[in-house]
Length: 294
Length: 298
Image (cartoon, rainbow over all chains, first blue to last red; front, side, top):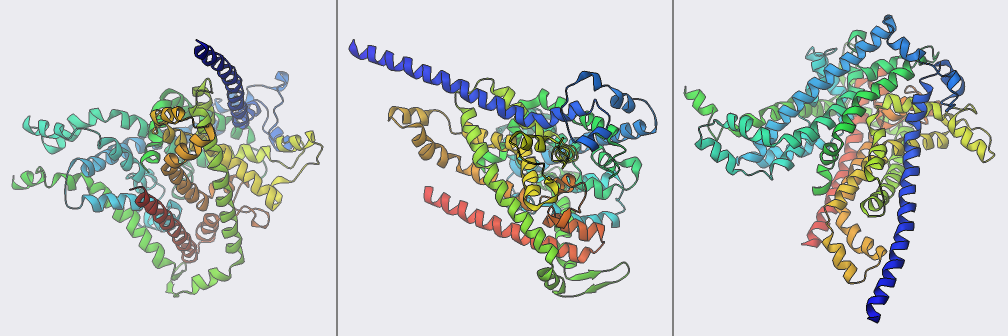
């Protein structure tokens, strides 16, 4: 009897301590989140003010509503030359992102399928090569690649931007990690039913790999939407610029384009933010695939 | 018909599946890699290309600007590793405990900076670190009674701005890596530790830390790679590749400057090859370290 009492007492104290710690920890993350969200929030506020204020005062978070207006956004939707330019960049980014994502996922899926589902002589070698490509930063290859893309007459074309990255090692790696857990017996079942090897990969295995596709689609789309360095080198004509390069051209020392820059930047975050909020849980699975198994 | 049978056989199929990778590997990896190494021994002019042996490497050894770029990149790498491993790990451990409420919200917000492109984040941070007294950072300084600082014009304040930008962008991402590592550990082992009366610190030191090691090594590797190859963050923070006294110049920034802006591809490739050798050495050290640890365990 005495024993149960003392346990109860200890439990009560433990709970009180936990409550205090819960409040402190949650408050800590709330503060951290406010700090992290601040620059984007300040950018959003600034986008409702004339761009020249940015030059004069930096990013200020003056919440005075009387000085805020929608002029910058109206300008972007006004249909004048500048706004046409902006929406062209937007469209180019969309096209590049969708094409890159679809092609990368399909190609990487089939490559990973080949590596995982069959036992063949070069299996180990090929997987090692996949890993090897991850070990050299892209930046080292970019100059010879640039020269190569010129020689292949792919400069200033969307293919020049996309082709070198379509067999993304990390995407192949993730599909492989996912597929090793799938039952290989399905392949034999498909063969007995008269499916060809390629039919099996499309009709039987692809549907059950959907979660992996979802995860990789988000990561891939994020990468393509925000990609800057390589498109900056490949695209030359202004009509092909994507959002990242286009916004970068607005960064003149005179600052005469900051109206468009700040509002355009905020709008540019929007599509990827929506996708992120919708598919957040898939994304977390996707990006952490490499970390757990090392 | 014979060809079709061959193409559809179980022996051929895997090769057909991996063919795109092999093609991409040869055309967009091996070929540029070999070209980069060859070009580093050449002087590439507009019309003629000359073999110059190791003279590019000799020039690089004496190149003051390259030394600055190297020092900048190394400092940046060391500082980012020091900041972007312990803190995200700590946050992840907290996040994994039952102590934090509304986890989904905090995770989403902490991850948000990674969604913005470098153009946008770089511009926002340049504006926050403006030298005028109305900029956020100078307003913070004013709160503690200090005079405004020309953040992006001095070496250490510039480096500080760069690190703040980097931590802002990657803290959430690294936290998620650690979080997924922690999730894979499972709760049973902690429950048995509780029964043995282990303290929180002991649980962290003797259970979490060793079990999270693969994740830590992974995060360390990607941080080192990203740190050494960092370019766009500084490019956007200083709105171009030219910063006062090259305080923002990195190895890749120098490669870009030489190769694209000054059209000296041979010399730029030499910079690239040096960077590659450094990256590979670090990678081998890491693999050896990782490998010996695995042997000890078994």
